[in-house]
Length: 223
Image (cartoon, rainbow, N blue to C red; front, side, top):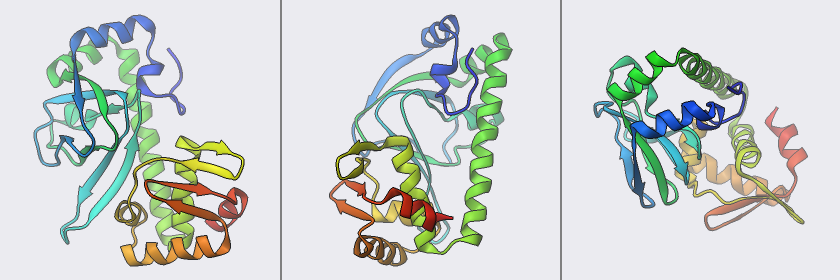
């Protein structure tokens, strides 16, 4: 079984383990913009993302949407509620046409009981996400809005970017509101930050995408 690192959950399983997990579930498909599940709902299923990308968000008391993360093929979604039996802490929305393997919570917990190596792998992945969340909280204190936006754009480029002759192209349907929630900023502050980065010639924005023109400058500004 592969070490977690940046490997997706499904990819990290051994071949027999992956086949055993697939045998427990059923394939479901969701169009763009549809919720796989909503926060505060019972966590009666877990999903393994097979195709497409999903954003996880949480609604604040003030009615704003805080983007918690983006999941991609191979990732496990909804596992926390399955493990602690608490309601969903986030809403999962399809950013693209999505295909998932859906497994009932009792079947998934039984699978973990039978395969302690997979349970340990899952624990390591959850810890990695918690460390990432801690790092982002430090960013909120140490960086201004421009620095936080640079950090998130670089994360998108590292995960989803395609190098081109003019820079790194990121074609993920992230809105200005999403970016505001992801950076702990207001939408107006994010708009100003993106305008600043465009005027510097570091990025170029387009509908449903962005190109990072000066990656090294963005990295320096994100520090």
